[in-house]
Image (tube, rainbow, N blue to C red; front, side):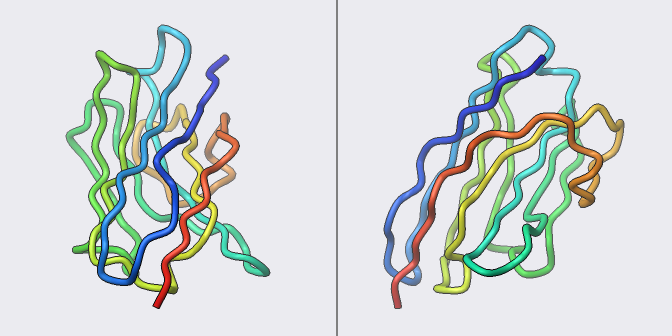
Length: 124
């Protein structure tokens, strides 16, 4: 069982930056592939970024590539999402998720554990 708690969301102006954190409980964090997803109001949840259990492989949605960076610190059981050059269309609830898949997947069905999410609002 893995419990995930996100933090770092908030209100930021377009062009600004935020860093999201996702802290995991349990001693097996380092064995999970981690993903970040987001859900805007009235829209379906979408994949944002993911990172393999070693941190050696990352994968991004085209909409955030070059602006967002995912990383992890297995010693702290934490995964991060650094978001730069934020746009109003990035406004959403951001959630982290843990998967036992060996490769990063953009399919939310491949993720076993989810956090509650943190709100990110980007004003124009």
